Length: 435
Image 1 (cartoon, rainbow, N blue to C red):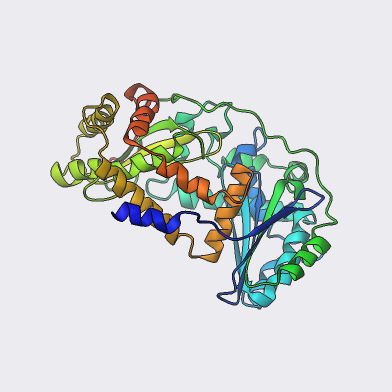
Image 2: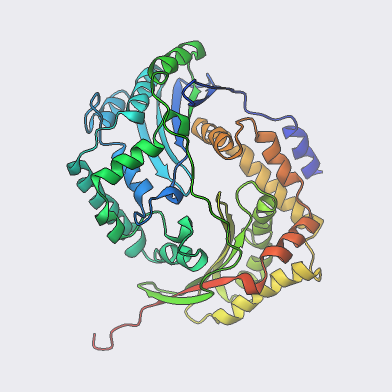
């Protein structure tokens, strides 16, 4: 009854908004919400670490930093200062397939936010000094978040194990020190010209604003910007098997951790939702299959997480195990494979109760995620960029409702077999006996 009740509350659900496109190709989404005197200006560019030039890993992320270094109209540091003295704030993220820049502030700040974003879309002032400065910032970020952080090396090793060298996902988006040091001003300017143009961007304005006023400002400030050449991403084929099946590394950590990984369906494609649901059935609650057995019954591991890392050109399904120093890693690995094998051959099929709990929890979490203004803007932008339509909410919910025990079984049979898995183990470094 809980599941049926939940379904009745979201049937016909949508996020009311308006979408249109400027003559230069800029896609615009307007989401009015007058609940609070607040506005969000959020811009997604269809460029991510996937599009890093050959021999220039980390470039998309490096460029994200450069976008805050000023234009001829708004010099370095003025972008943040103008926004913050008026009560606003901003941030940005670089993903595998997109880069987004979001600004948040009081309603009266909407004109300033739009003007500044339009200005830096094509008017960035890039100098050698700025490149050198941000290059070192990014290199320090790599050290802090990956090289020196406990277990951080996992995320540097994982893509090289799963993707061949010719695939753009082969290197983590932070980039290598060698490639970052080799970045030139010419390469930076070419990257900017290729990807930062209105025909490769989607703008969402959300919150307390007058739509007619905002449309006029968008036309005034974004309309004159010239479209760039046709955007073409390098072709690639999602891999089906890992490049390296088993690897052990050391780190300055107190206890072992290991990952089991499989290639899985790409973002929004058939099987992607099933993988999300399967992850919830395997871990995430005391009664979940792997958590129940390995954490509570056997007490062989400290914690276990399972998740579908959805991406546009090759997703990854992961089982992340936090072990004890005495954990038999091979035995736990075998237990995970056994659980998946039992689903695959039907000896332990997914039950309707398991499915209902997983779907209920996922849908409730999804609905809670619609409360925030920025969250709703991000959802609409994601739909527009990945599916080509901002009004995809009902279809998104429906793809999870279509998941069944049988569809999960087919997914496991096709993707999550032992021969297609990779394992990465992190063990503590041995202490120097002379100390």
